[in-house]
Amino acid sequence: MAKESGAFKLLAGLLIGAAAGAAAGLLMAPQSGEETRKQLKKEADRLKKDLEKYSNDFSDKAKKAKKDLEDRLAEVKSKLQSTAQDVKLEAKKAKDEFEENVGV
Image (cartoon, rainbow, N blue to C red; front, top):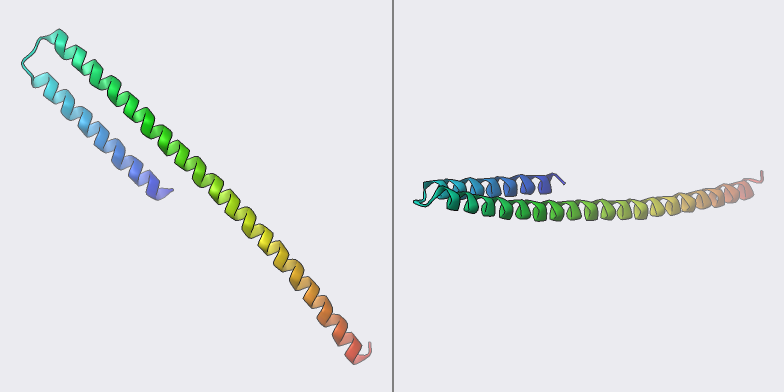
């Protein structure tokens, strides 16, 4: 999860940097104020869509990682329970054999 968090921060930084660069370029461009505002709105809308997409992707990956972890934990729990039952059975067999050999 920490790895994905770092990747998410990097991606967010890149998107913010790209947006800032695009905004600076638009503000420096020789065009009318109305045209500049339209382009800024268009870029802001595009950035919003990109952020929503990456946020959804990150959320989906986090949900999948959680489910994978839960599945793995359930599998490990089942194996541990099975092993515990096997150990109990073997201990009982050893105890019974000992008592039989000692004559208890």
